[in-house]
Structures are given as structure tokens and as C-alpha cells.
Length: 132
Image (cartoon, rainbow, N blue to C red; front, top):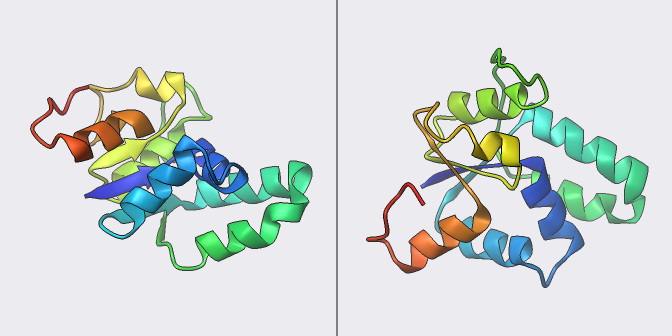
């Protein structure tokens, strides 16, 4: 599966090594294609430089081998457009996010928009309804 990760998923995975996001990243990284966009990379670097400079090397190590995609998409909320556009351009199967505004757009795109929890649950139970 091609999983497009939002900024908050990667940020939480790096900052909280025993948290849900970190467990999620470990669970999906070997068996799925992880995708992130240029906007996400830029946003991560800005946040890490401003708030978590001591973790910048860990971020760069994480980013080193991941593909980056970018596409401009015009939506009502301009902050979500780069994330959604990049997920679409990457031909993602799933955009993984905790952003409630993005999660509300579930029927708008050709890819699934889901939380980390729902992706992990669907991996454990593959027959589970894909809309949850």
C-alpha cells in the first residue's frame, strides 16, 4: 500500500519513540511505500528548527530515503492543499493524518484518508470496511 504521511504523523513518530505514531511508522515502513511531499518536508524542517533543534538529525535520517512529491491543489483551506495535492500526485492509496479538517474530506479524493489507528486496525483485520 502507498501511504502518504502528514506532518503530524512524522513529527509525533520522531518525538515520541514509544508512542502510537512511532509504532505506526515501524509497522508500515517495511511492508508499505511511505510517501511525503515537499511541503511536508519543508514544514517538518521549519517546526524542528524552531521547536526541536536537538532532534533535527533524527528527522534528516528519516527523510533521507523517502520519495518526495509535490503538486499544487486549490482547496478552500490553503494549508491543506499542499498535503492533499502531494498525496494525489504520489498516487497514494492512503493519506495518513490526524488533521480533523483533512479527515473530513474522506469522499473527495481517489485515495483513502485515515488516521493511524484505522490503518493499523485494517492491517490487523484486512477484511475490515475500508471506509472506517
